[in-house]
Length: 114
Length: 155
Image 1 (cartoon, rainbow over the protein chains, first blue to last red):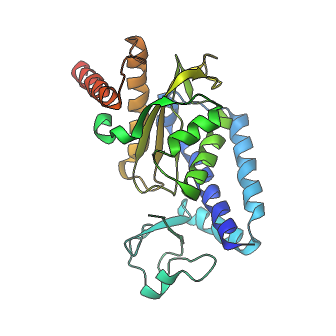
Image 2 (tube, chains in turn purple, brown; image 1 turned 180 degrees about the vertical axis):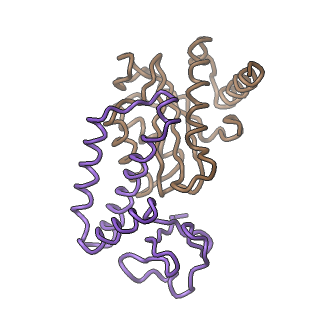
């Protein structure tokens, strides 16, 4: 699978997981955005579908990290991993692999487009 | 944090072309991001809409999500030149749309606080019948600032 497709699926999966966790925030319900359980279930199914579209090893890494940290992906800013706030080694900044993980915390790294 | 200070005139478009909900949301996202980042944000926003409309009623909608594509809280506002079908909770069409995109890492949960604030401001806009009053982005930002001041005084 092309790395851009993997990256797109991963990013969407991550955004959906954030959506799911925000919906459980008490403040979210207080604001007035109440989501029915049935709808939550359909979102969970959509995330499972996305997970199934990823290469199994990447899906496995993602799920393991999500269980450990809740947020499996960390943006990179100014050479720092924004998950653990450690500086990344220079060689990692070439981003040669399909997915890159932080050598310190293990989170999947994401470089934002400027 | 003031909403009016987060808004800039290039992020307010009061002349959005009416169209399907996803197209209008896309036009608003383009005020913030372009390319594949915009595509990702639109996909997440539309997933959120599938869970239940963010059309809060009285012609206002507040689509929102977190996305890896942004590194800080981003807000854009659009008003369509003709009301659009948004499947809002009151089943009425929508014209004024506040779009909020937050980064995944969000110290102090500014995202939900801002979302709550926008809901409050939106209610004031409808209560005072001000949704269609501002004619320029500058007027809109000033109006939001005034509403924020009034809300603060009432506290």
